[in-house]
Amino acid sequence: MTITAAEQYFLDDVSLDMPWALVETFATLHRWMPEDVNKAADVIVSRLRAAGVPVEVHQPEIYLSIPLKASVTAENIAYRAKPPSSSLPAPDGVTGKLVFLKANPKALRSYNRDVKTLFGGSIASVAEVKRIVGGNIVVMQGFGNPALTSLIEEWGGIGLIAVNPGIDIHWGTCTTIWGSPDLQDMGRKPKIPVIAVNNPDGQKLMALAQSGGEATIRTDLLEGWFAQKIPVVTIPGTDEPEKYALVHGHYDSWEVGVGDNATGDATLMELARVLWKNRANLKRSVKIAWWPGHSTGRYAGSTWFTDAFALDLDRNCLAQINCDSPGCRWATSYHDTRAFSESAHIAADAIRDIVPSAAIATHRPPQAGDYSFNNIGLPSFFMLSSTMPDALRAEKGYYDVSGCGANIAWHTENDTLEIADPANLLTDMKIYLLSVLRVANAELLPFDWQATCDEFTATIDGYQKAAGALADLSPSRNAVAALKSALGALDQAPIAAQNRARHALARVLVPINYTNQPRFRHDPAYTVQPLPTLAVAADLADMTDDHLRRVAGVELMRGQNRLLAALDQARRIVEAEAG
Image 1 (cartoon, rainbow, N blue to C red):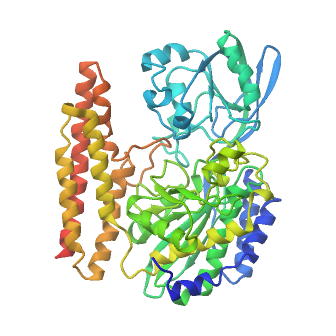
Image 2: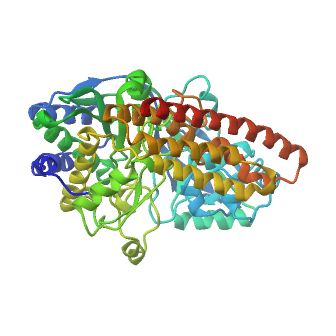
Image 3: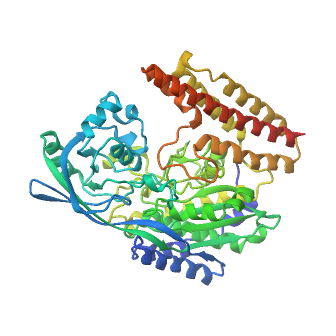
């Protein structure tokens, strides 16, 4: 695309003055204890109001699990450790034999729960891994993520030691509960202590595990319901003020968290200032929100907002745009940009128009970030922002992390002011602003549902190939083709009709591609396969037990029915608006 004169008018107003001042202030503020998080919210609110931007502040009680301290003792040696958020508090210690499991590090980062994917064939079955793990403390390389913790618990492990890749220990979380728990969720809170150690100490513990040694894990956490502030700015549009794009990011962090996520908070603040100042030139509204409870509540802030304003989001929100870790040191590539298929071109075009030479690739977002809106059905793009080129990361010997522009200061005490880069931040602020404008000011809502149909077809073909003669997914493939054909006719409809259809389609097609739970509930925090109700088809060929395969066939039949009903509903929406 080409930047229009109207868009350039907004872009020319972007400045580093106000956002960089916030980055510098946040570089001095710890933002993980509840009272400190609220103080940081007060800073955001006071600076917005000083700039003339009105801001509403909600203060819900959300459930938090705040790591305090941890240790592991083996052979009379105490090793330094950190407990991830939501680990079982075990101040008196849990003692057990150490066992070592070797897993695929990339699979651990993806929050995958599939044994074959996790262990790459080194472990043949769930029964085998249960025999190894049961009654023991597991030592594994990687990060103590939610999917892995839940599996170790299911397999009978009594504790988990995650051996981080480097000299530093990273904070994180280990619960599969998304946001504050409800009655159906609360049983999934981890019932085992989990800790992370650095690589040198972890190597010693892995060696001890292989020689049959034992260890004692101690963890201490502060857990409960805490009132936390959620600042929200609403910039009204002139033509359709009830419709809006939601731009958001978390302002709580580990320690001072400059790259994750003070730079994102600063980006949101500058967007609020520029959009408010120029609101007379906005067709639709924009809401900008800062979340607490991201780090210690597993997205509890954004989840509360989703729940509290679910019906308004359902009726009126056009897209959600997540802002995490923009403007970091050495982060000049966009090859790991996250976006849904229907909105990927919005992100890619905005990047290309601001940075014509950028390396750009968009990918399916993982079950992470503050993507707390999938069950409502919002088109989505961005999660993490610019990142380091792979060649530079390899040159520096950096391992893979999930933020800070690939700086390994992520989730450590080292995520301080030098992790932010003013020039990169200015670039990323403009990318975010341009992409938001292209939702708010578009005459025709820019969601490409034909691209989503192409994704669905590729997913179905992949599952069919894996299942072979054990499944027939042709009804789903045909239903996608019928929907895509109907979408072609929609292009001739009036703009208002096309917009109604593009908006309504999101509520049907996003949940069927990203969720297992019903609408207005939140899926667990581990990987959701594309078109998840069909995903069991890919496992049929590996099922040697006839009874299990038949049971899986029943699940697939029901899952395909759900998908077919959604595709039929989507096609009828399109046909009704196409006339």
